[in-house]
Image (cartoon, rainbow, N blue to C red; front, side):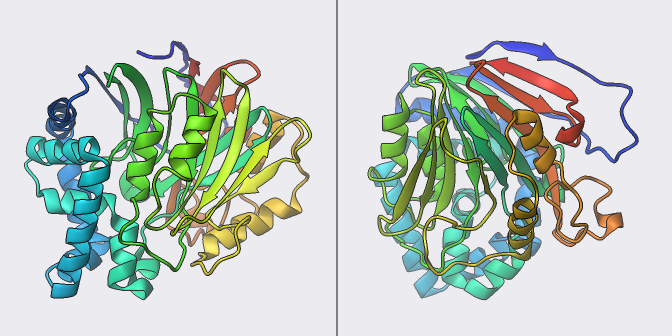
Length: 381
């Protein structure tokens, strides 16, 4: 275990509010640095979570990104795009492609399906931009940043409830911990490594796609190897071009540095460092620092608009209160199991909320609505 878990609290008496179920498996292991060792890591993950990986792929083929991608890659144009992206990723990140190969072997599923799942945004937008935007199952997530803190809502689809897992492994001579969605590389959620480098992510959707760029899952997987803030920024910005785009909150607990990055295809990015003089900033699933054509969901628009009406937080508790806000019942910031009954149209569920506290060197996970401050897990980095 790379960072000491310093509390685990199970709360049996809770306020009368709808809570989402929490049931998360933990995957641990130790692996070497070779491509074959990365393949073994993937194979072990695939064997362990074979049932949920198969369920994830079935759901995606029926109504998710794979329902758009798989018919497309059977066409000449689709096969050409798929081949270019596979060759590009295999050249740049052979170890991570090997993890997907191993995962497919361990779970007994198709490599093409898993690789396409990990490039879901890129390939689906190339195939059919309108359907890709209309059918995207979920947009991840919401963050409030106020140095030296970052609070994060991890939103997912209903199908992600109780199917994500926690990974805590040693590989390449280093360690990382991360929240992982079945069938995907670590991590399209959030995580940190033994260099005390942490990150959270927000989905964004530019119109443009660069088939020679890297998928966001591969770049965030690479972030788990970052040595320090400068190295993390390099991996997100200049080291590898993005196929689509992403928003990153990067935190160096050792250096006490906090940075927001918006990245887009063809080398476009904006780095926004935070310090004690930087105002608090709310980020959802829209570019707010880069001006470019983008697909913005109603959920993201509503969350940004609602956050703008609330007092700007000055403390972590106030940040968590904003992330727990449900005043906009049609598209709330926080989504729980009762949101649909109140009129929530987003189709989202907030799987968990975490607070990164660089002042005290801790990461805290909250059960249910974070405004109630019910601690579920905690780690010291």
